[in-house]
Image (cartoon, rainbow, N blue to C red; front, side, top):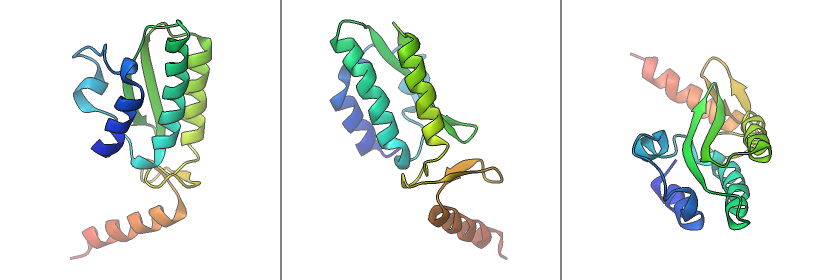
Length: 133
């Protein structure tokens, strides 16, 4: 994800980023997904933020990455079934959302990504260009 988008999440939800330990993948690598999943991540962070504001924290974002073509979000702290359910829902939504542009997409097993038809055809064109002599 572009630095600008990551920064906007850190500004909106500072309490979810401030207690991160150096060993957390999010601290080391940042948010490791495409810009198309920004709104999904924003939605789950808003749920976590609300919980902290209601005194149900502390919560810290520990990891946010793509794994098996879908979004994986992990928290440390007071994680309950509601937050786990929201993270599971984010995973399901990401399986149908283009990681690059955020439009309706599908998992592309041969490329190990979730893309819309436009981004997939662009990707195929770029892939074909690399294999040309």
